[in-house]
Length: 281
Ligand SMILES: [Zn+2]
Image (tube, rainbow, N blue to C red; front, side, top):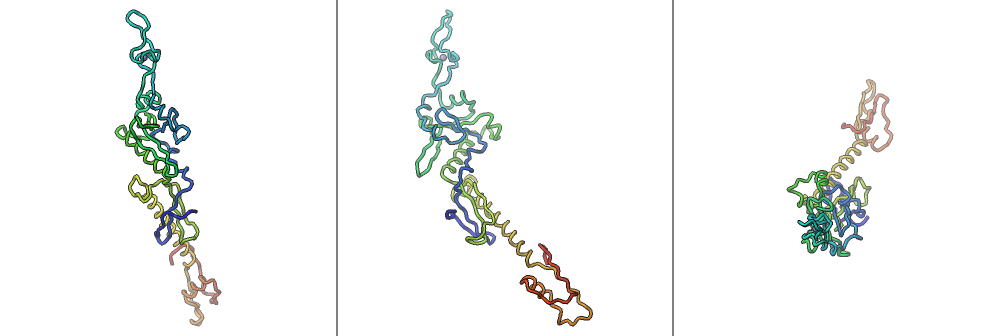
């Protein structure tokens, strides 16, 4: 395991936060999303690099001409076929990104986006003007019903999805490990947290990660405490024999100590020692 990005103590235990090297499991596009990402003419739910670079295609979007239904001609008053005025006989008209995705994919909201791959600096998606777009994110009535996004939040919901995706693209996937001490046995761990490093806002996700890690530490500390208690808690019953000389009867503390140390103790037969697991003395 690589060096942790953060370590801290909580509930007497050591918590280490690491990058999650298997970030794919946290790919936000694997979940049910409001928006669908589309690049060039392809539509995909994830990031398919093969389909990026479709700027040119997005500059020349066309939809079927609604005036002539795609035929390219119309009947004039004399009953003759003439070129459709709207599409000049093409049957297709130029469309904006929004019009195109509405026509082709029943989109109810569409945002032009720009995907930039900056090599070792990572990749990033930004919303942009239509002229700079090399992709879009759009949503449909069906995805709105599935995710429960209200109409007033359509654009905001898509922007949040882009932000979350950028966090993932930038490698913002973490996990925590709880140990009793450095190098000790892993008591608990959890991976696949999408978060922005040290960003404790709701959107940042870092606060949630740390809260979950602290909760795990508290739980593990409690388990450890109970584990120790099982070893050292005894119920000692002493029945003092009538005819015994007091000096031969060990005290309850002496019996506890003997049991704890695992040593033999010379007890009169009238003394019973009962070990109770998990109970308070
Ligand atoms: Zn037409």
